[in-house]
Image 1 (tube, rainbow, N blue to C red):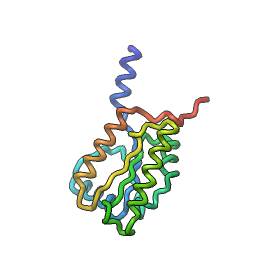
Image 2 (image 1 turned 45 degrees about the vertical axis):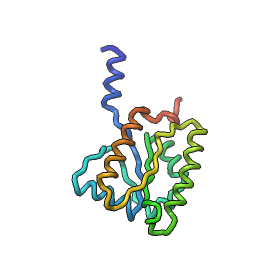
Image 3 (image 1 turned 30 degrees about the horizontal axis):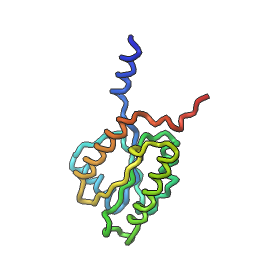
Length: 149
């Protein structure tokens, strides 16, 4: 079989592995609503439930990429709705710095995303995850930290 044909088949079959750090109070509940409402989003996303998006250490994002995840999503409450008053605003400031750092070290910006989703926005959560998954799929597998012997 032609090498180009084999590579195109692998590209079609490949699905990005995405890890999502979701705020317990809003985003996780939104993901749960999407699930119980049977709203489809890619099954290759793995959810990590955190108390607040403001508790996400930037190292978690970088470590996820080092460990081979193709994409990372951090999602929290909408501004003004945080159960911890300003945790989501802290997360937004951290995220802006992390995006610049990742760009500096050569990681594609579309591998890492930040979004707001409330507990009532299951449909929005699913739509955003589908969009993010498509963006990451276009980038291909995360090989930046792949060890070459």
